[in-house]
Image 1 (spheres, helix red, strand yellow):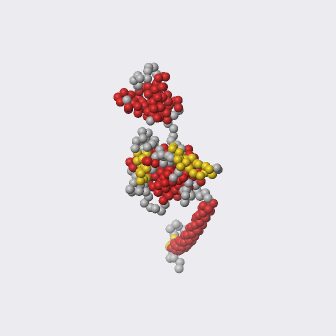
Image 2: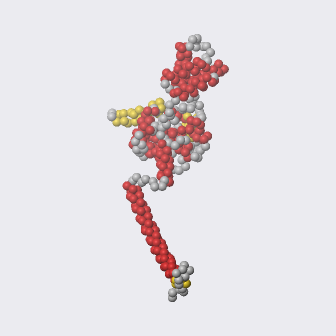
Image 3: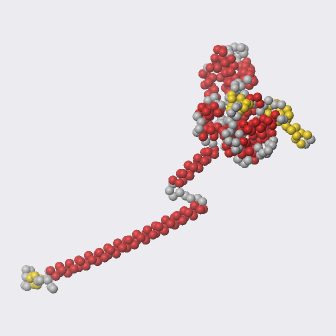
Length: 403
């Protein structure tokens, strides 16, 4: 509401300075369109435009019929044009996998018997963000009176503040109690009870579930923790998380992660499991529109690499005569080629022997044919023996074959 009042005052000031006439005159859609365009080009982005648009719509709704100018199609057209001109690619944080979340939680609970309150606070905060798919501002705004233990053992948490809850409407999140007792460190209900009991034993008073701390020192030694009546800051929580990421060696480039990684990881895991409907995922993410969830259904970097490697492996296996690059594979390729050459040589020798046998059989057959022809010629010669009996052409006498 405070942001809305400021945005409304800035709009009235701009209108008074740039438009003729008094502030009380009826406002029009073209004036709003000009103001939104002015904000976009002045700031170079859409943040100020969206804040002003939400404030103007809110106050126009309070004005009743006098605020109908905000329903004009011109305003929607101008806003869409500004979104095309000034929209920037969404820099989505890398999400934590369940295994990575376990490593981080265990890091903050490394002192098994009596963990420090500051570590217990971070473990509860991060586990809450993951189990509830929560945003940091939602968790920071939770008060101690907003938590209730149900008969089932589950925790009911009322969210009073959030990105989609600017008007502080009641939103309820149920934190389930795990059915198994093997790993109570990952049970948000057990860990939260342990944390709240230790929180209530500290000096100072704070209404927030995740308050800011101030160490109480006696000399150079810190003796106790004093609670401040304000929530933990984003910077302190993020710094602590990135330290845990670095110490657990989840990834060398810890800048890819942030507090929003808990929400991204939880929603991505839920979406990729295929066990939940779109309505269930929308309720889990507390989105006003399902379009906001689209990026959570896309495979993250690690999933894309995994799928790419699998597809590449299958493609390589389907190719004949693939090039083997490693030394071992090259040796295997050489051995394979040698065996192929040896097999080809053996086949060649066998074929050559077959040809030789055929040639021998051919020569033998030819020799038989020649002998048969020779016998036939001799026989014909014997049949044509004649004797000349006179000088004329007809003076020949056939003689019987010689015996």
